[in-house]
Image (cartoon, rainbow, N blue to C red; front, side, top):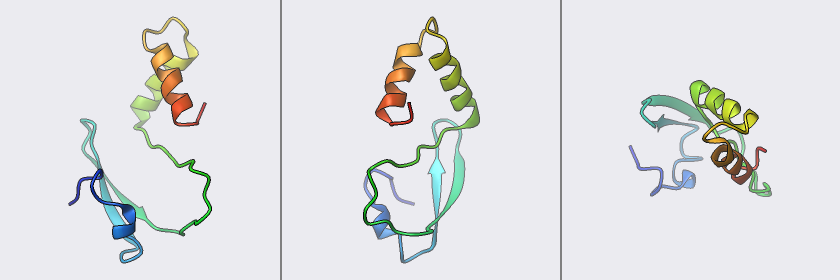
Length: 83
C-alpha cells in the first residue's frame, strides 16, 4: 500500500492493469481501479468521486442559498470544474 500523495499512477500503470485504491474519509471503502487507456492530450479535467451520502449533502447545500455550507460547496464545485 502506498500513500496517494507520494506515488504517481504512472508507477502502478501500465505494469498492472488493475490497482486497489482505499478511499477513506471515515468510510474505509476499497475500490479496484482498472486502466482502460492512456490519454496524452487530456484537458486537465478529471473525475472526482464522492460517496452517495456526501453527494446528496453537496446537492442539498448548493440548491439552498440559506444552507450554512452553501458558498463553501459552490466554491468546491467550481474548483473541481463540475459547476
